[in-house]
Image (cartoon, rainbow, N blue to C red; front, top):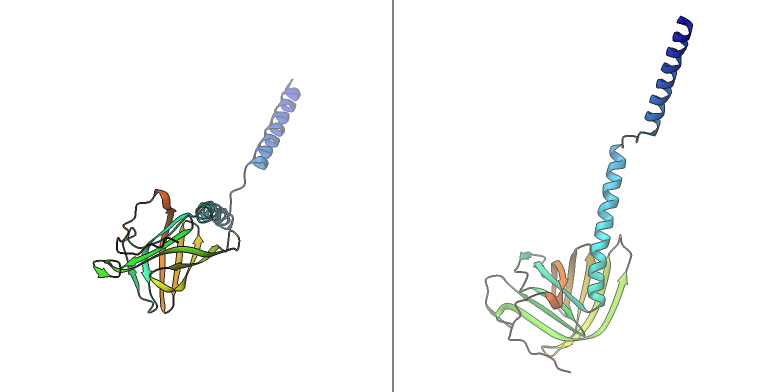
Length: 196
């Protein structure tokens, strides 16, 4: 009986040891810091890509507005501005570029700046893929100016940048984008609207 008991006890010990080894074999290994960083970066890239797709869809459906939180000119000085007054809007076949300095009045638009509105003449898209961003370049004409003006809009995730070119007048808008048809903006009433 003692031999049977020892054999049974030995068998139980071997069985417990093999079950314990099997359990540790199937346990998920603890991730290294490098693996955790890689997973976080992958998740961040996925979220940025999803947000960028929304911006691309808004531009391509011609229902896009970039509301600038900062603007900068040729001198390179960056100024914080009111988002609802400083914007680049694409709505159907038209574009509006408006900017004004905070706390100022007057100017061509009564807001301390300028408002250009016109019809889009040319629309080019350069999509370099999820990781490199999306760029839309459009040219437009406006009764406020004899030149053909240009706006280049770059989308990266949920942020956007627009560069407005009009001869020697170059303004860079940095901010977030939204759906133009659902956004309330403080638009100057002193502009001349092109109706061609």
